[in-house]
Every structure is written in C-alpha cells, then in structure tokens.
Image 1: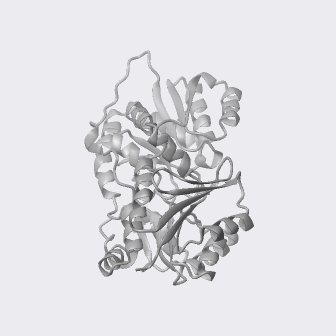
Image 2: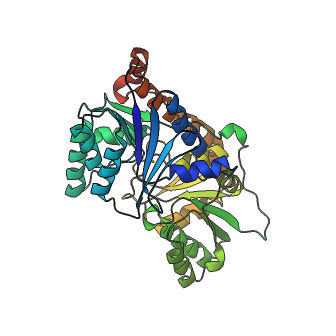
Image 3: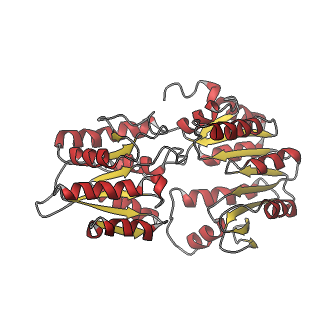
Length: 397
C-alpha cells in the first residue's frame, strides 16, 4: 500500500488559527469553516500525515496540531516568495498535493516532480483583454497536464468558466460546501417598517473596491439626497478607513454601520434581519459563486446584485433578484428604492429565493472530492468520473 504524505497548499485561510479558535469553543468566521477543518483532520485516517501550508500568515511556523494535522505557515504578507514556498514544500516531502489557488508556478512544480495533484479552486476567469487571455491559456495548458488529475471549482458557473478558457471538461468537477442553513429555516418576507425606521440594507464580504463597496456607499448617498430613509451595514474586513472617509466626504457617515469581521452565526442573523442584501461585485473581481448569494437566498432576504457574469446563470431580474450594471451607483440606488417601495415585487423575490437556492446546489461536496481522490479505489474513480462537468449530470441546472 502506498504511503501518502498529503500537503494542502492555500494562498490564504490560516488553518492553525481556525483550528485553535474552534477547539477553544469559538465561532466560525467563514461559511463551513468547521466542516473544512474537520475534513482535513479526517484525511489523516487515509494518510501517513496530512499538512496544510498557508502562504499568508502573520509569521512563519511549523506545528503539529492536536488533531494530527501539521500546520505550516509561510509568513508571507502579500506576494508569494516562490523560492521560499518551494523550499517549504520540498522540506515536507509530500507524495500528493492539493492546490487551492490557481498558482501556475506551483502547478508546474507538481508536474516537474511527478506528484499526483488535485486542484480545487473558487475562482472565475476573465476572458477580456490579451493579458487575461494569455494568462488563461498558460493556466489551462498546465491544468490539462495528466499530473493534475482533477480540477474542482466552486459551483457550476465557475466550473464552466474553466472550460471556457480551455480546461478539459472531462477533468473539471463542480463542488460545493454542504448546506449549513437552508430556506426551510426561515419564512418568506414582506415589506414592513414603522414610519420612524430606516430601511436596513446589508453588505457582507471583503471591504475592497472591486467588490463594489464604494458603489454601495455612493448609492446610499444618492438615496439620502432623495430623502429616502435607508441605512447600510457593512460586515467584513479590509479597507475600512478608506471607505469610512468616503462616507464622511459624502456626509452620510451616520447612515453607515461598520461591524467588521463577524462570527458566521452573527452574519446569518444580520442577513435575516436586513431588508435587502447587496452583492455589487465589479466584473474584474474573480467571483466563483459567492457564499453571500447562498446565504441571502437561505434567509430569503431579497438581493440586489451586479450583472457580474458569474451571477447571470442563477439570478434573474425581477424574479429572484434585482440586477444592475456593475459599478453604477445611480442604478444601484434606483434598484434599492424600487424594491423597497413595491410590496408585491419584494414578496415575490423572497418567495422565489427557495427555488433558486435548490437550483444552485451541486452534488459533490468538498470532502467527497478530496476523500475519493485520495482513496483512488476503482469505485471512487468511477464516482468522480460520473460527477465531472462533461458527464451530463449538470444539464438540469
């Protein structure tokens, strides 16, 4: 029987920090975080040792955790130092790799060293502009190498974007996290507020320009200038000071609440309490299928989203969301006002959320993909083949 030393490499998401926090009774800060931590630990039953290597950590470290997982932190603060990363991988002597980000030099290294490799992403791939096309061509070429045995991507649309850049659909497997909350947990919503209340609008995600945070703030300023009573809560980490100054410059600082990075249960509570959820990502942000869409649909809170290409397959204007051009604050403000002024529309968006949620579910979960790949038993290989993008499994979605 082959000895397996599995190394899981990810750009961000410090496994050690998450394990220590959860083991001490702390809350999840991201969707399915405990599930992901436990999935990695369970891989120890099929391997000699499993390790995680996180590129972005506060400091370098190498520690065997209480659950048997070796956690390695590279200590990078931004850009990857490739010689250092290569040294850390070599020192671990892995026999198998799981690569969580489309880092082409890392994929090349696994091919050169003939390591069986599973790539698992949560990214979309832009096709506009010669730089993107060249980068995509090079990435597709390396992903199509036989040493990269399977390529997973989060959700069907993101998986199709891999096919669109030239990755072989016979090796692409759409995957998902298991459902932590569902529309069955919440009732459909109707418009209701007292005359003294402002409408509560919510943004959840990274506080950066490409996610549309500045567009949200500009839209709130537009609505306030029209005496439309609305407030915005922003949950997430990032460039908070920059956007707080933007709100001050627009004289709407009192309309914005900054709550930072919250435990996941509190995020769900905020989503359920909100009147609207904004998902205004710009086209140049590499969305897969944002967990914010899943969670908004689960809580049945109506969505106002941008026309990001990764949303288009599932979100339909006036049926399960209001769709506006990305980076267009005037259109975003108008959609917010329309949705919060039309009870019939609002109720329909909330009612239709459940059907949409069910339609975007894919059968392969993260643990299924990794466990069956590591097992490599004939029945597991057949299972993976039956769930690849080219299998016909997804024609119903």
